[in-house]
Amino acid sequence: MASRPTKPSGTDAALAGGLFVFGVVEITITDRAGTAILLVAMSLQTWALVWRRTAPLVAATLSVFGVALELLTGATVSDASGFLGFLVLAYSVPRYGTRRHQIGAGMVLFAGVAIHEFGSGYPSISVALVQSVFDVSIGAAAWGIAVAVRRRVALSDTLGSENAILLNEWASREHSVIEEERRRIARELHDIVGHSLAAISLSAGAAELAGASAPEEVGDALAAIRRTAQDAAGDVRRLVGILRTDSDQVLAPQPNLASLPELIRSTMAAGLPVCFTTSGEGKTLTAGVQLAVYRIVQEGLTNVIKHAPGSPTRVGLRWSPDSLVIEIANDGPIIDQRPDRSGHGLAGVRERVELYDGTFDASPRPSGGFRLEARLPLP
Image (cartoon, rainbow, N blue to C red; front, side, top):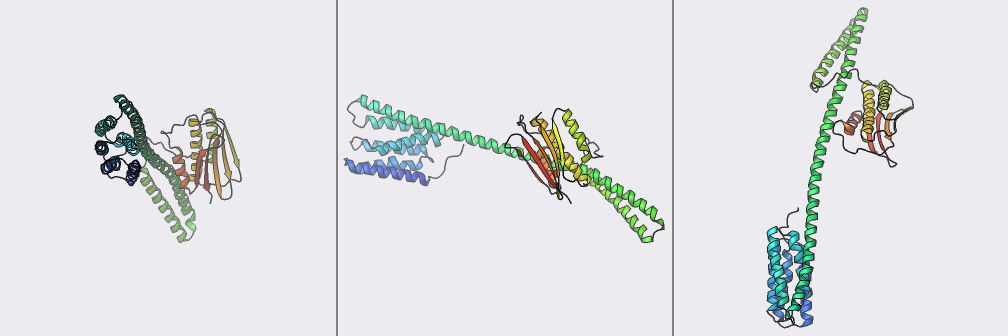
């Protein structure tokens, strides 16, 4: 719950000033005796509201003291401004006061009601009693409203705090997922790059042998290529090797575009109807990009199986001269909306797409279902 203000607010000062002016008008038009004392009493009853948030017990005490002072005039007390001030305090004490303030100020306020009604010169005690019951009922209603508002504000603050904690946990989990996916991508690229460098080394070695009869410069250059490739392969192995854990499996050979039909078949065997289409003229992709396409499709299908099992799903590859668009869309409702804490999820897909300067979007479809689209630029 929000802490009580430490300084009176301009709003409370304006409220107190407005009720004071109203009270002065009442005293003036009724031309009651003891006007000077009435003005002082009215000042206490109304200007006490300035402290209704910061010191509700003090405000209630000053107001009741103003009521007692007003009764010293001997005039029948029936001012509306004082009663309005009482209602404001009956609301403010439980709304802003501590438990100790509520008990003390509540006793003071309702004692003030008794002093006001039984000292106002009503013709009989029964009339004063009825008026007291009326005042107490109205005051109790204002008190109850304040208690309800205070509980609602406290609940809202609690939910806000819990929501902030959940957001922090989500952000931390998202960071962990992204870091894990980066390590996974690094391990996969390590195998691809290492294999490529090894092939370069072998090719350069073969060229060096075949060029024995060529000029000496060609041989030296090819030898340098071979040595550089061997050194680079070793550096990559040492650098990225620290990312491996004991539970990692050897990832080579990595999946590629040719592996997609088998992925679709295994997904359909698991009970998910999938329609796989391609359009446009395909291009030759590097091993890393092919692996990214495979992982994007794999994650998209996994999400459908987990969150909308059994819904018809379309997987499409759209080729254009400058990009490849991968789309995974399903028509069924999202049955399981719980977040996936076991896999890499959409955060990992986004990380993989951004690695190749692509764009990524995943969102519910207006007509139902979910759609994932990744666009990878082509050289």
